[in-house]
Image (cartoon, rainbow, N blue to C red; front, side, top):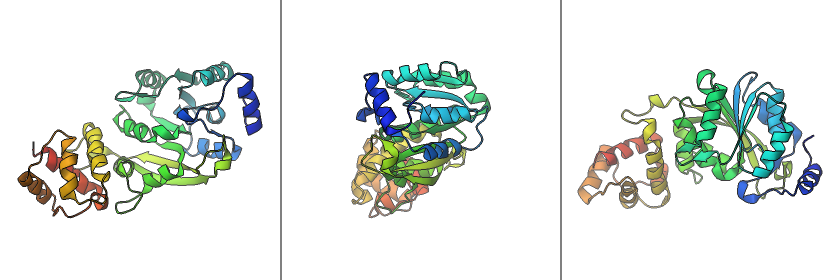
Length: 300
């Protein structure tokens, strides 16, 4: 039987020569009601494919399987993979992929193959996970590129990350992750989880969020999902100097796209979007950033 309380986890791991590793974000949710909240937040999942990243010791996995889900899980820690294989050896609806869930260009190939074999591209799938905090941005940026994006995404994240996901232009919490979320997802925060709900106890609070992917075909004319990674690099440079005006930051942001803006081209790009260059990037609405991105690329 898998451990559920802090004391049980300590004894269980010690007996197997294992320990939670900070570099993998291994803080286990031990508050039983919150585990059930996360499992239920995606809606009815009986018979549906659910992707779980970082199952750890399987508390959420067990709750998902109990709800009838077909779980595809990715775990990077080899020691925990052994625990999971033993615990769910008789579960025909559980598939474990050992290794990093992220490849060089999105989700790793073995994980994509497992999702395909489970029928995720045919019948749709969900993401429900206590996500390792350090991969939240690249993971959320990878999902829109999939052959079929998930129907909904339920994640336990660091509270500051959840705040950034919901931040609007002009907020001190607005980041490239905010832009990604505003572009690709409808975001709802469901619950704040105190640090004491986890083992080991992290230094920060967490939050459960639900994200519903947007239809990216409704975006600005000329923008496609293939542009998303370049747009995020562009936005990261703009927002990295949030207190500086666009006349200073835009040439640097253009450079990451391989575009050199001479003064005349800089003025032309700004005027094409109706900007003077005295604005700051962190107050620009997403449609304006999309048009600015297109104007810069058009200057090549």
